[in-house]
Image (cartoon, rainbow, N blue to C red; front, side, top):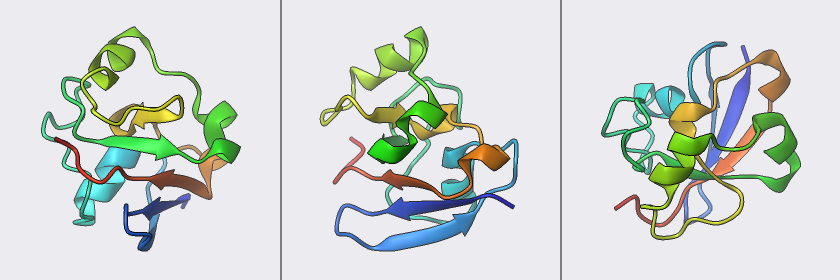
Length: 106
């Protein structure tokens, strides 16, 4: 099963296996990971699953779509490597993905 390393704002790392086909957000929420709220349940209708994709993984995770980019505009700390984790679907090619969480989601 592919693994994602979630890194909290304080540097705490959480390596979690996420089933292929599930979103990075779902992997965090299903495992009770602090720092990713996913208030809309993964519908790309909020920005409470905002993450910073590690630079080494940007090409593999792709660019945000129009709706995702619009939602990211609500994230106070959005950066060029920002993504909504509900929009990153796990595949074998993403095994080892590293995402960092902002200090707060609201």
